[in-house]
Image (tube, chains in turn yellow, blue, purple, cyan):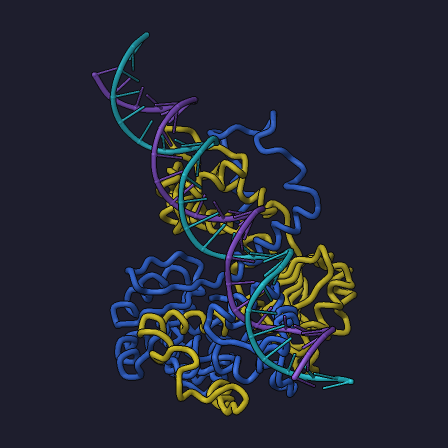
Length: 226
Length: 226
DNA sequence: GTGACTTTGTGCGTCTGTTCACAAAGGCTT
DNA sequence: AAGCCTTTGTGAACAGACGCACAAAGTCAC
């Protein structure tokens, strides 16, 4: 389930505050979900709390970590060392959760050789070597959109079966390869959509109103991509 | 719908390639969704294509942009200018889609005054002024986890009703305020989960096997937060 | 002008995920 | 030791999304 990491974070926060036991109600509130859903998730996961008391925090942390595969280390390569790649390389949340960054790669000769967050940027030509040598199992793609599919094909061919994609394209991959996508501008657009809704619908116009330019004579292009 | 931005991106890509008309089947493939779902989304949105031909690309771009509220400009403030905040400030996808960054703010005196991507970083004390002066309607929170809720409360009090949160906490906000969350390490954890599934279940153990340490004597802590 | 072909728009069955509500289970107090 | 109280685990109703499949509608060729 996609909610387990959220539970895990809430639990580790409780753990740091020295809380030993927690009810489904409290934990659900901390994670921002319904308590019945949380209980069903946890029971579906096999672990149990004790009725009348709640869940033991440490035990649950261990169970969820194991379920998520965080008891073993995962080796990550970051491809594309632009602004975003740099931020990812310096992101503390990786190392502290069992993700080891084995390499930073880029195609730009001006960037290759630079030291970023204690690592030397390698040339993209060495991609296959680095994946094989370090046993990389997760690739993070932070390249420009145009390069993403090509890089993706190469990492998949080299045996990587999990890809985290920050490039604004839909990657096509063979069966058995997982892709997750994070797109900053899409998140903003969704917020803009809701914001507009609050302000009273799209410009207050019904779609295809009398007087709107009909399809076929369209000049609306300049309104979207400034 | 959360899929409209994906359609829009696929459409603008087609537009740049000079494609005038597209069928639901083609567009669905480009967006990575089922064609019936795409047609239902588009019809639900009110706009139509012409049967036997498909959708006119330009007209659809205009309609979706209008629905998403991209025909107007949205003013954004980025709070927290660490690695991630810097990457966001330099991200080209904002300006090109009608999102104008009105301010970069941070609490660290060493960062305030620096110029990042052509903007001078302001002190967090000026938060309310900047929101009011520029008419900020979307706040991007890229602070450390501990500061996020406090910053969120302040931007909401200042009238912001949409928040994009990169901090690894669940923000609590009053009714009517939208929060979207992007969490890099959660994405990686979900990938790790699937990766482990491919490799044959969580360590190959059934939960709470005979011989496992029972709850109450737990020493598993060191396995999770290294 | 007519017929064949293409593609949209949508009714309907299905399925997954969510929530309610309650019985079973365990602890705590007296 | 007995009963009360809290909290889990889950059956069942509910809701929304999804996708198939087909009829309506329009185009294109001749």
